[in-house]
Length: 60
Image 1 (cartoon, rainbow, N blue to C red):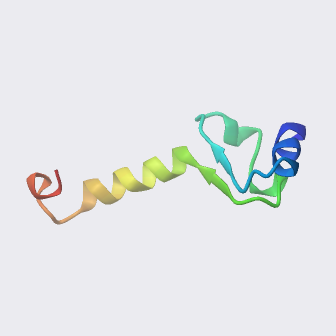
Image 2 (tube, rainbow, N blue to C red; image 1 turned 180 degrees about the horizontal axis):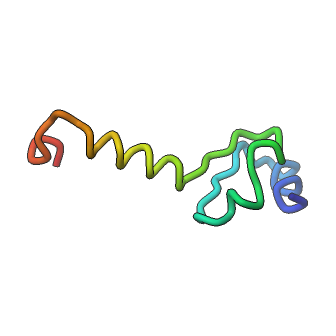
């Protein structure tokens, strides 16, 4: 959490949680910056893609 605070003071505008395990240690409650959980983002996008009614060939 100290690193996030140092980055915030240096001008960081948001936090990207780019490791699958990092969300077990750090979350939105640890900072007042916007937090982006890439594991959740990818999982939700994968489900939307898998459940899409558009044929795969049209998406790619």
